[in-house]
Image 1 (cartoon, rainbow, N blue to C red):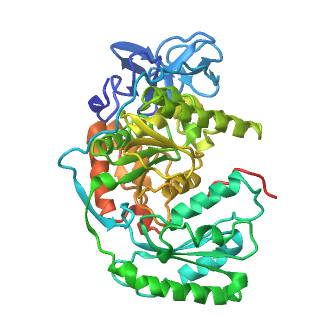
Image 2 (cartoon, rainbow, N blue to C red; image 1 turned 120 degrees about the vertical axis):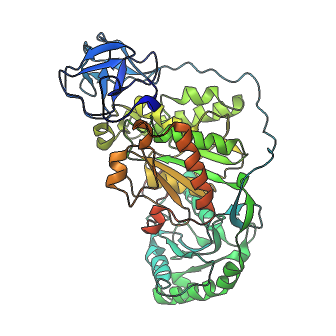
Length: 512
């Protein structure tokens, strides 16, 4: 049954969503009661347990140890015999790490030529050729020791009238920057903060430090630092303390205001869009509605040589073979797999597993294990060729579909995507998420109508209409694409209107 054929109210024929012909489970579109009869592909099944909305029901008998199939893919083994009509979840579905077969690309896919008739948006063309969708002045803390001061600087402008065209003075406080082991951890933090300071949505920036921390502000200033005329730095110890540093920062920002105000939105090719793809608070509908719709948007962006960046390495595990097969060449595929292996080793240091990823809310929403979650999560990346794979906060330089190594923890993942240059982000959610980012607009896409109605103030798009039979995946994908262009041109998202400014760099090493 296609999703378009589902109509309210639920009937025997449309109460369950059967996603792939080989699936031996279906997903309850509405709560199922014991004794209820459902019909899938012309076969009647009597429901034997109460099955919550979004959860799985067995469509035929599954023997102990037999594979449970969703999306046409293996999501684990039955812990015990499962009769047709039984609820399938953590009590009877066992997680097992799969030994996947990888189909590596046998040739190289060339970079596509720029198509004709690319749409435009109204943005800020920066001197390095990138496009800004916002026009902020950023105050970034080099360490936790300067976080409070950075916040004081930004707060001092809250009651002031800024020049037209300046979106605001925003702070980037965080808890890192000192007590780090010198090496990959500090290099990653520096890459992250540099990406924020030099972001195309930032017209000017100030970096603040205490003065004696591991992460010295000199890493961002002086010879070799790009856009030095747009960046100044101060330390509390060198400036005379908290209040003196606030005043020094304000004087520097005063000199940046006129330049920021002089920046004007102009028509820019939509190929300059770099869209971050994120999901959080996922449920079973994520892989049915919002994620495939966002994937359709990603394909539209790839078709005009814009970029769409999938993230969350923890949420491609068990589905990475699908991305390997789509890679531009063997090198891109091998880099993706190397990041998966690195992440597995990283987790093993703490006796962790990829299957620790599904949260209690994910499971309450019908997702049983990481295999099932990942298969739905990768749908955000659409169907186009995987063109580039980068590490956390590294710059996205390729058009088309890309991947960044990040955790599944939403604010950390968004921070990496923003530091890599994403100038708009799209965030699907089934349980409901209110996360945003200081300098990059975040579009929120609901996977189901009930949550959309409950959190209406936080949601920009209702992809739940797909499961309701009111829209197709392609229609919602185009709706998201059109909204991305409007948001890039200045339309505010719900998270912006509510003032969400979450910023959390990824600390990978020990506290010293």
